[in-house]
Image (cartoon, rainbow, N blue to C red):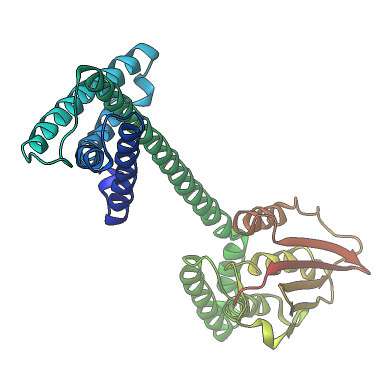
Length: 351
């Protein structure tokens, strides 16, 4: 739709501009001693306003010539030809309107419209219509730029969502396999434990599916998901696995991406607790220091691991996921102090 005619505000602004052009034309007639003020205004203002309505067709002239198909000769022919046609239309319009006003037979009506003035009106109409085409052309170019930006933004959102979906569903399949193997082993020696483990596993995956559809969840929901995961692991590892929660009450409603902590807990067990003869305690802590939410996980590690260390894929995925969601506003740091591996995540504070 023609942007000038899209709403009342644009229509009013457009006709205000054409009214100014009409008054300017009247002033030129007065300054060149071709007419008195009353005659000039009566001649120039109505014809200019009517021509302003006709000039709205310049939008369709500009739109009919796609930017990809343009060259100098085509643009000159189409734009110039349309401007010449409407220049003639305005000159004819001025002639007939002046003839009508002369019928009033009043001093304030009509001007002396000679051939020289008619030629000037033709040139003026041609230039005004050509200017209208150029204005619409600029508006169309700006609209194309905005549409391209919107398409690019939509593509980025889709790409980001796809990336996040892949990253947050990368649950280590060994966790599922180990859980099923543990359930199979427990059915013979501890049927009640096998049943509890099956229930916890079902609840964990049910909650995982529900939370994975959301972009961000409260910390309390993430902790609940972690508790289901840890309950399964405690059945597998028994007293070797201990967990300590140090959750700041001010942080429980803070938002973070779902399943952010579970892969870290899995790494803490796989690369820490499992290699220790006596096991150890995993500590999950959170604190709020506006404008940041800090979440950390500490776990003991063996001074001499019995198997090769991990490749760091989980930490790389975590960094990529936070970068997609927060750009450079989030931070992940990890270090080993006195055989304790600590990873801390800093997120912008959201509730």
